Amino acid sequence: MEKKKINIGLIGGGFMGRTHSNGYNRVPNFFPDLAFTPVLKAVCFRNETKLKAFAAQWGYESTETDWRKLIERDDIDAVDICTPNDTHAEIAIAAAKAGKMILCEKPLARDLAESKQMVDAIAAAGVKNTVWYNYRRIPAVTLAKNIVASGKLGKIYHYRANFLQDWTINENLPQGGEGLWRMDAAVAGSGVVGDLLSHCIDTAIWLNGGIQEVSAMTETFVKQRMHQLTGKVEDVHIDDACSFFCRFNNGSLGLFESTRYARGHKALYTFEINGANASIRWDLHDLNRLEYFDNGDESNLKGWRSIHVTDGDQPYMGNWWVPGLGIGYEHSFVHQAADFFKSLETGEDCAPTFKDAFETQKVCEAVLDSAATRSWKSC
Ligand code: SOE
Figure 1 (tube, protein in one colour):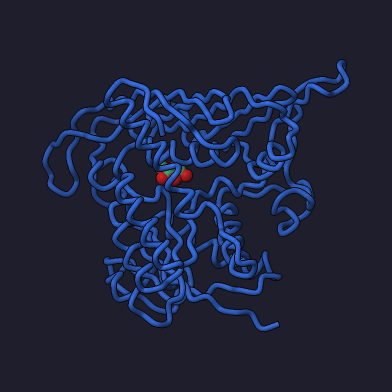
Figure 2 (tube, rainbow, N blue to C red):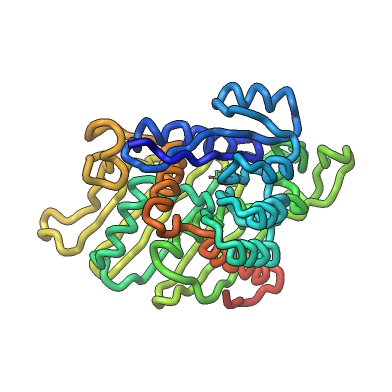
């Protein structure tokens, strides 16, 4: 059967531009049954020398240096936004008005107000959309979702998540500009809250339902840094670390921590859920495994099992190698791209949509507000 082609226009050629491009490239190889297939039609960013090299490396047919031109092109069906956070809203709103499908890197935007405009623009245009909260599509995390949905955990009491890094423990690290825009609040919107906790919140809402209220604290350990673009020492406005408590709609309690100052941890995303009957936990540094404790097990055999999520009947794994052989971080993007094309076939949403990501953004905003006002905030 001849596949229907979806012409992709990718904007931004950084780390996320590479993960998404790899995702599109792998889909036809590993998800051959899909009716739709991506065509890497154009890639867009300003540095022309790097642009040509990026296009050649990842297989894009053409290039643009102005995103507006890319959006105007009739041969682009879907716009993929991989730029820094301060441009997500403007690009997404223009792309929606042009009737393009939109795939947007997380977080949806810098703040709730921008996110709202994006959600409204998408709703008015009625275009297909998704936000790349990729960790949902690590097979062990999807299996966690299936276990929770099956009710095996029983009533849920606790949800705990961490996202720990250490790459900013250096007073001489500048803020802003290429490679360091995550350090500049004007571009990123926030620090670890938007960058890292947004992942934890997205997964938490997906697994355990909505969050009612939060109590948070944040800290900026290094108060001033040289700005790469101005060359001047300027105040730092991002949160370097954040911890918060919360109450979920289902009555369970949540505890979240994220920092870029946890020496020894590079990208330690972990979560644990404790239910009346069973518990599960997951760790990004050992991403093919899901730990599971079932209180219903025979008493002398009771203990945490470590499930190696690589069998063909476990989520997504039937599309990869043979049982026992693991996959990695990059596969979560392949899965999201595949699910997006599948959603074109089924007519269903490819979650998280802009609307879903807006719920995550609401919690992020409440967390920042709670920390600033030293009070509980509802979401
Ligand atoms: C930051 O270092 C970062 O790259 C985030 O921006 C990603 O979303 C996260 O998945 C890994 O860490």
